Image (tube, rainbow, N blue to C red; front, side, top):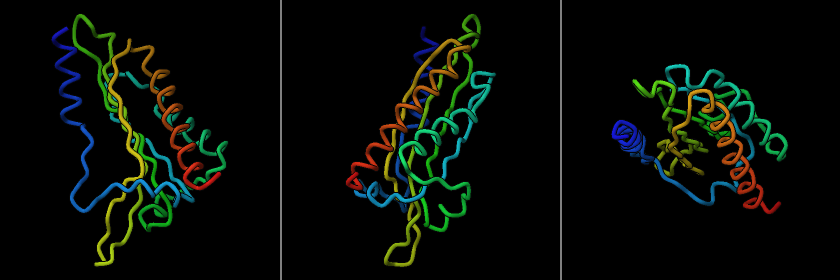
Length: 165
């Protein structure tokens, strides 16, 4: 039990959301969203997430059904023409005797790059959500996918609401 609590504390401490220097979060950003590039930065080890691409597919399906345009070109985000939806699962299997248990942190961020009046580029965070969980290894894939479904549905609803739909 101490091992599980320690692992959760480490995940929270190392992955607590923090805005980097030169970045800011703006609640009005959601009304500006016109195009989204979805990507998964899979950082799960030990066979806890065998199909990370299913998380991207789930997010894209929800956004598409909501009428939010997608792009497959990440350069549109770096050029400031679209938003990135970053899905980052981080996790690993616990040691003996609990090697069938996976602990994970899921981070979902919607962001864009924007030029400031001074001519610098800033990372603008429009939405940020995270969760920590532990699940039996065979269940983590489906739990993460359900989590993505919930969070991306919330993002899509917030975007549509901000845009007056």
